[in-house]
Image 1 (tube, rainbow, N blue to C red):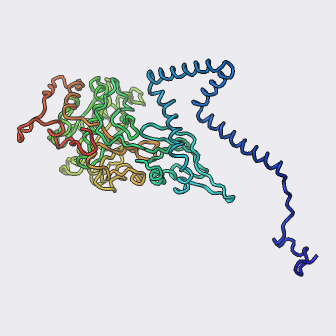
Image 2 (cartoon, rainbow, N blue to C red):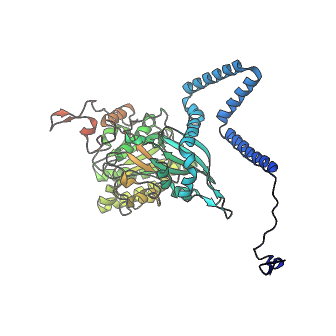
Length: 508
């Protein structure tokens, strides 16, 4: 057979011919189509039922009661179920919030805010994966938990993706969902949490946090976290460096930590030593809390640090002879905390011989102290290596408002600025806000330390004085006066060199 002068047999294999198609009858196609989509809907319903079992299980039980016993019994069961829920919420609000409120609010937030734009958000930030067959895959959201402040999306990553890939796109995701901030935390291999902060609870002053009667040295309440929860500092076995520009709230961070330790100071399981090169302008109001203290004489400050080194070496020998490998604070061997304000004065601005001796004592304390219960809590303004050459010996770093963006990575470690720790952009009207690099979190945690007025510090020192200070007489509890103006001033105005005044966005 010829087609336009060409035999049909010659066209075989040239792509110009096709095989014969078999047409499936409509009465076969329609049932297959319906069965396919019914199976897909059933899988989706089962997956949702297992995901939100807290809602699906009670609904299933009520349905069984209604079908077996009737509507009255189902209504009675529902009433009892609601009554038990109210008792649970009233009696154990924390567990009710975790088990019921956060999942329920998370379901609502997912369907109303995140689901519709999830695929475009993943595609726009480059987190999608397209196969050669043009199938598109995105990281799956396995669970959503939500509070009034933060929405937490639990993600299962695609093969080959890392938590760092998601963290690098956090800023893009923040803008997609108009969040105040977005951070990424690794949960497990292949699993991350993406936190979208809808509000900023740190724009208001944080009242002094009440310390625990028996402080847990691994969880000291010192600040309010960006998620609205209390942020706890791990001090036992760690050295803490506070870095911040003038007026950034370093004093607030110091006193918040001392307040969390105060009951243990009075009990004798924690012992404080204070060094204040500013002549006592920061630490002296709480002098009663410090077993040893120096604030004017450089030789006295150096002697305090060298005495701490000698005491540490004595304890090290005693614990070695006793066969103790893990230190536990006690009244016989308390946790020794050396609090130093303006450390840069001793390491960079003091006379050369003092600087050398201070550096030697500090390096011994920082390198050997954690094993025998000696911790250093130091604050300074300039974190550069020439100011603090042994900066890397501090195991826990907190950055408040900094003067330059280059200082961020100096304090918090390389990459902290890229991951959102914009310490140089913290407004001067919001002192006490800081970024903390927490182990296990890719993004630095944003917190605000509690504000303690001069009256709060004096009251704290009077309530929990160190056992060594038996002759301490508290200052009179009266407002400070301004002799120049001839009027009484509040705690914020009486010592402007030490505490900030109320700024824009703060609650007076």
